[in-house]
Image 1 (spheres, rainbow, N blue to C red):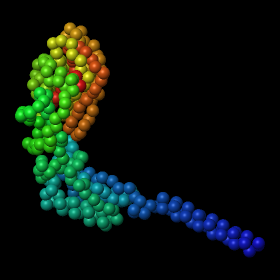
Image 2: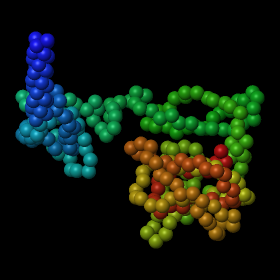
Image 3: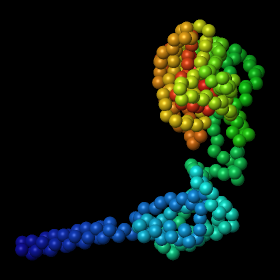
Image 4: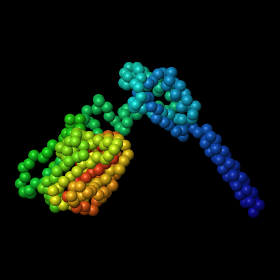
Length: 302
């Protein structure tokens, strides 16, 4: 019995010592982490403002701060251009110098897959090999044997390729949209309503807003009409402000029926895409405190 207790005591002592060593090792590694556990960072080379001396000083400071490595990212954004031109022989030499200095300092070194803000891209990538956008145009036609030429969709970079033609039984609201005539006007005399309602997003037309008042785009259906969705496409959003959909039966007195939210779809694309319970009126207005460059604006019964 005594021998068994002695063995248990020795085992407990060994386990306690092992845990103490592990705790001490964990504390030491936390204070002085191995290279594999150190954080890494993007290192921006801004607008060609680079030098071998500057790269060395930056990388030494990064290593002294306990960072484990870098991803070199060439970028230009709202600062004067430096002397080193991107992808020149001098720029490639600078990149090699940065890689060598990382090796000397025990830092990992990587390069952004393709310099730019979001993803792979550049003038050397042809449109057919680049990121693409699905675009479409639509027509409502009488069923049966149909031979029609579909209207031309939006193009990007002068590139377009057909993917599919899809035909399906139209909803009653889609037939109503196709057959109902309306007049589009604006508070801004320079606003081009043809560009804003041509079903394409190739071009934009400016809807400017003065400091004293709001601007609007109006749809006059000639008689009461029920709409259930609103869409607007824009290339940039300039400031914050209130954007609403209004309705009226006399074209003089308007009331707010829906506050609209501007969504960011991509680096250079904003949109408003709302659907709602049916609202019936003769006149509808998109009223805004924000200046927009509008490529498409649309109300629909669907």
